[in-house]
Structure formats: structure tokens, C-alpha cells
Image 1: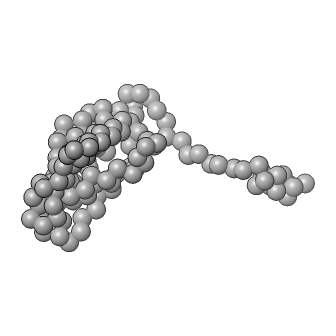
Image 2: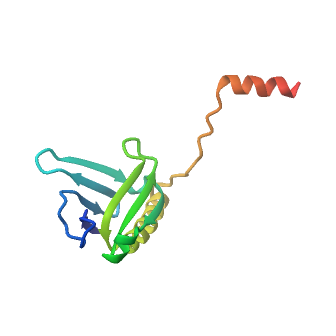
Image 3: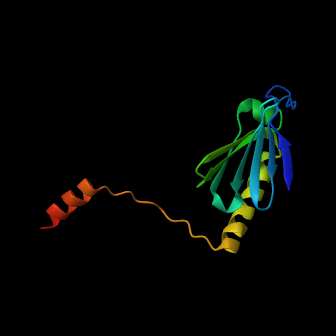
Length: 126
């Protein structure tokens, strides 16, 4: 399990009220001081993970992990300006794969074919 805070880009100080908690089953993002918002994404829904590091992030040992998921509320999770970003990215990839195997999910691609397109395709066949 990892628990990280969003950090200020300058010197990597934890001046934000955003906390990321990465567990075996889910990723939780807690934001806010007076009005708090907590968003969860189940680990088996994570499809791909990307690590982005700007020049200043590299200088201060930070990184941004972007998780692409099939979650309806947040399909792109941004874990911004966190320490140990490479290690966390690898952990999310491995754990997401293990969770997909546990719940036996299959990632499928939704090809949204509209009726007009299918009608035009049927007309070309004849």
C-alpha cells in the first residue's frame, strides 16, 4: 500500500490537501480541506498506466502517474507531483493485472456502430 500527497512543484513540498492512497483493491483520491471529495477507482478497472515527468519534476524527484481506467466518474486518474512515481506506476500495473485475473475480467473494445453506418455498409455489399 502507498500513501502519497500531491506536492508543490517547487522543492516538492506537500502543501496540497490532496492525498492519494493506492491499495491492493482500489485507488482512492481525497481532495479538499473544508469541502472534501473522495473518489475511488477499483484496481481491476485500470487498463493502462503512464508516467509523465516534466523538467522541474525530475529536478525535485517527483512525477505524475496517469491511470486510464474504465471507471465512469474518472476515466483518467492523475496522481500529480508525487514521490516514488516510477515505483507506484509499476505497482499499479502489477496489481491491476492480478486483480483482473482474480475477478476474471476481460478487456473488450466497444465498437460503436450506428444504424446509418451499418445500412450504408449493407448497401455496398449487394
